[in-house]
Length: 109
Image (cartoon, one colour):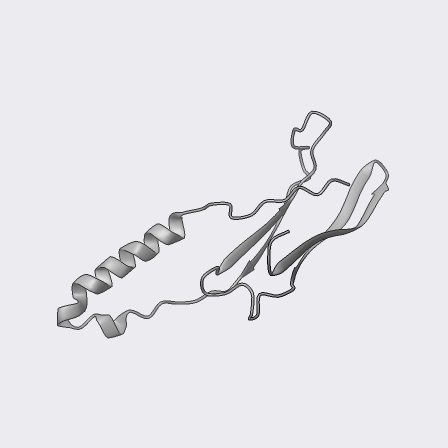
């Protein structure tokens, strides 16, 4: 379990050779709104695997929980701070381009 949030798979059913369920993420103790400025985007991804562990085609679903925050650098763009503003813009582009998995959990059903 990841501290501060809970991931659950509920209402798992099999009907007509299809498996369905409800994946949920709850704030159980982050102490503020989630996601935050430090974690502005959370992606929930669910899919099914076959007996060999391979992804079953057509089963992947993705849901995004995000807080869109625009960075206003206009206060830095006055003469002496141009270099700082350019550095922050470059860092922001690099951060937006980086993707990594902070937490992954497999829930068997």
